[in-house]
Length: 296
Image 1 (cartoon, helix red, strand yellow):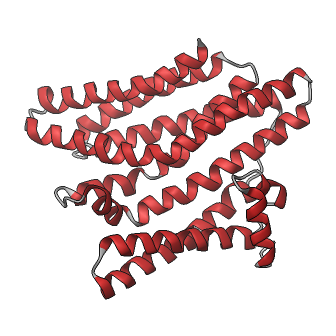
Image 2 (image 1 turned 135 degrees about the vertical axis):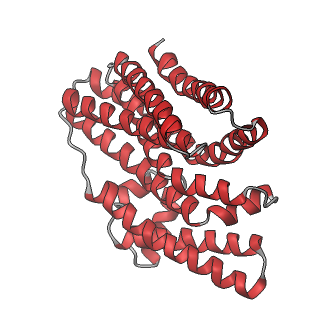
């Protein structure tokens, strides 16, 4: 039941956002109905759709982490619990941080490639650039929910989600009433929701597991590698677009360049060990390739 409830709060937040946003925009501020519907359609149909893809990785990791942590908890092996928690968080950050950077750097080209029409492209791209950080925060909050559940602290994610939802609604109302950010207020409120979830969950994990997160390889190295990746993707896209004038070709080439640069930078900066790389899909093949290239 607590697992269902904590997941339900995530889904309820979207319904609440829609109700609050449309009520305040239409009934209080008397905004044009078609404009409000267009804003909400962009938010749900483009922004949420794209940001939910990498977050799904965190959801899968959270589901796989629960039985592992439960087994270690029953065996009273705190060292193993801390090791599994650290590896799970690092894996999610290695995936989510570059996804966030990539969505921000290539926001407009990706939207053109997937949705074609250029109507409201500037609004869609700005939403994606502004809210790309939510990929990291929602990924982290989803995973830490699973970690707390694996620790048999089932009620905590529900309590944290309820607190975050309430404060996030307050922020949404305030922003809508005192600013002209329109649909951007929903993005900022959701970033705040995910940030609060991360903070509250991480505090509880540190308290009950006596856990302290390793920072350099978990956050700094993926962030630096992602910055190099973003610069490479930006350069490849714009350079190739000048030559061929094809958005699709330029985006695909930029994505391939981004994957290569990020992978090489992550390994050169010692962001992953051989053991951690073996945990990836096709890990043994990746290790063989990396060793042949003398990157490990």
